[in-house]
Length: 398
Ligand SMILES: NC(=O)c1ccc[n+]([C@@H]2O[C@H](COP(=O)([O-])OP(=O)(O)OC[C@H]3O[C@@H](n4cnc5c(N)ncnc54)[C@H](OP(=O)(O)O)[C@@H]3O)[C@@H](O)[C@H]2O)c1
Image 1: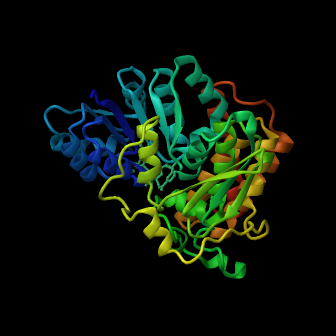
Image 2: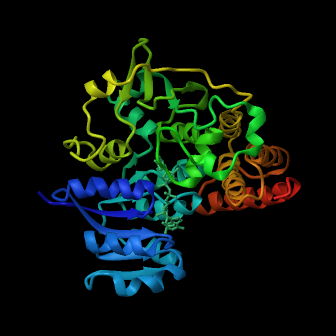
């Protein structure tokens, strides 16, 4: 059997590590050819390079490279910087690129990989939010596929296989509700980054954990789902499901719904994307109880409505999607800036969503220009959102 040549971008992060755990269990099917990261964890990156012996390691920041060079296997090259990352994925030869970079920083590498004809296993939802239609056009031009890694979108991808596109009625995205689901809203002003990143059911990077606490993550996922599956936002619902076992549901026109269920371990959706259209055996080491045991030890599967007053972020994202133009890219950029300000303790948790809302108001009142037609236009909207978010943050003291 010939092995697929894979690049893992964001190799040292939560999704990157879970991807490499899948690769570890399927060495006969996957060859890790490129490992890339920002470079803030050089020792871990070197360890992974010594284990997987890729042809190339790329670090986006020059600071990380110095510590790394002498730690790599002799057969592994090292390159450094943003252009090096684009060259690594954009010059062909890779079968699959897993994009697990956090934030809109993942947009250009995703576009370069698709343009070069590599299939994309997309965890980096921010890239899809900022430029979904452009990424689809690049994939169509090169014949590459975009496979979702987000557990909700992997669930929908699987459920859609039960019917034809014209038979789909609605999508239902599930959301854990995050760490503050049942918290008194009056106490949210005082929450710390440590509390906001302590997710009840998933172990994730800091930014997505905060997004889960505000439910902006679900807003971004709504936009992602609309672009990925070509379903209007008005036909996508969100339900709180605190157990995070039913990962999403597709309702068909006949009234039958197909739900996907698995343990809340990212190895399941990652392996689905890496193995598609096949299904490979479940890794022995992953949350390895079978579904029967899992359900027998789960006393309840709850589904609740989202409280739009406690969690306004999904409605903002829905409005940005409906508004079109640069609104989704600006929403994403503003959220990245506001989350960063919260994580560095410059503004309270409760400022994040209002900052994004103000930037979207400015977009509706002042912004000119339409849907991004290219990656450059999407990046221009991203910069627009960041600039306005910084101005608005200053009004919040951040
Ligand atoms: N975590 C989850 O369970 C989960 C689930 C679904 C979707 N996602 C999505 O997957 C993405 C990654 O999330 P995560 O939780 O894995 O994040 P994370 O743990 O913070 O990891 C981020 C990774 O990206 C690397 N990175 C950051 N900026 C980069 C740049 N400019 N160039 C190259 N590499 C860069 C980091 O490198 P360093 O280590 O060197 O800093 C790290 O390897 C996000 O878009 C998130 O929304 C995550």
